[in-house]
Image (cartoon, rainbow, N blue to C red; front, side, top):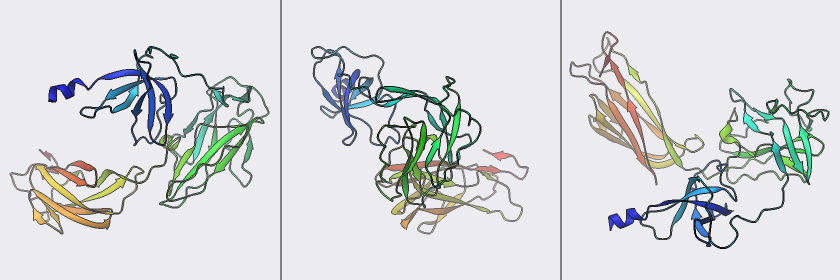
Length: 359
């Protein structure tokens, strides 16, 4: 049975025919088949990949042990030739959009400004030039009036010319907001700020005869910078994603006591980097090395301690060394199971009285 299941684990190239982003499925055609096949794609993408669009080659895989389940796993190598029917999706009418440039990115280092490049865009079949013009070096400051003129219509073909656009302050922690920059036939840039919400923030509507600069920006509550991962990001309900561990990696020798201690603070965080309040059990296990650990639930133990957390985001454990001649630097493993299993490895370097690492 096992060998038969492994035999069905095949990967193929396919043509992406259409996409249903709400159900997170799409339809594809594979080599030698006239039929459209339903394929699933991951639900935990923060930003939709550039290759997930109609007419592109994608790589699909049949999942082991699940009859008829096909999933898109990445970009394809070549567009296959189906048998029967059109070889490619029917072309759609030419839509308004960017032809060259108009790329939106975070500044370096990240700030509440975004950088946009000059370029050309199409609206209702007419091509317009987009350029900072004579305002190449100054930053645009957002004020009450959201309209900004980027130049006098001078055409520039240097696609590396950039300009800074300032974002308004982020909403309060725990809230999310979608913002957008767009440009119309008059070359004026508009900043549209959405309404902050704790769940399901709504994207501002794009005015007619305008194109979006880059993509929508997901502004996280309390943020002081905008990163590239925020541009084009789709809001998802908060879910446990990682364990954030704070500890001193180097543990110096103590001349005051033979049993000095250090704290290990562990926080459960979501995909946005915020702590999640929940009820769960944290486990701290010593994989190797010496010393012992403490939690309120388990007390002191040399192998494993646990701590039940009720409506909290984490817990702070204590690690103690003994400074004996048999000491070895410990490797600890923090773990939690909250629908998904998460773990984090902790390596503490113990130093001897001469400041050398004890391995």
